[in-house]
Length: 322
Image (cartoon, rainbow, N blue to C red; front, side, top):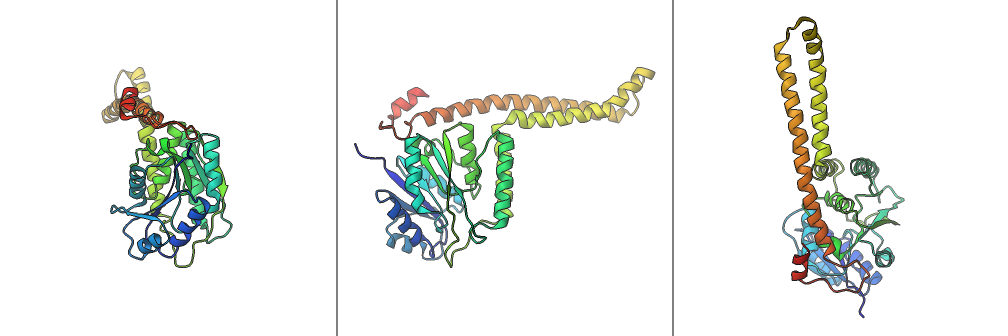
């Protein structure tokens, strides 16, 4: 029986200075893999250099890494997917070990956590922001990875084909991590070297702009995936405010049988109504999210685990399972 098909996915934007080195590294590390370079409106020679290096070059016109990843996951068909950046910061030589572990342990995702030793490889601001966002994700979802922003990942087919990508930019790694956590997929992290970019290549990640977008994505995903806790917390805060405002009025009424500060009483009543609405909205949305999660789980289960030599099911089988 033939081995699994492997696709190396490299999203690129103006990486003419580094893409040849990246493609050559993965072609040497994974000789049987097909290397795909998805160009995202580059204005330099990224396309020409990648094609000369032996990669299959395709284009995505919608700007943003999230759009590129969404297109790659939709178009490329393989058993194992290795995703990295095109600017050569990740260690291509680690790819065979990552793929082997994914197959041996039948995992759905392996994160290549970065172990850069130089300031040029891993800027201090990015390092602090990564730790902050990773800790927040762990608090919101109960568990996390140590490097949620790593772009070096290995996926199974069933992960890729069940992932409903919605992100537009660099927050795509956060969405990928949350998808794995929500479906409780078997995953692992493996430390991998992280190098400084070659001369002429610069990071496209903005510490503050993209950091804010990633933080916003975490909060949005928390609202979407944990609506009862999200809206319940708002309802609890509104209810507590109503109790604080109403307590003096209740004590006065018990003593005098009068209701002073009538506007405060109306405000407290309104806060109680809003608190109840938040709670019931969270309860209804939690039921909707549970159903949506079950649908994603069924899509995930429509493919065999990596390492099992079974063909993917036909469309009729997938529909009957749903």
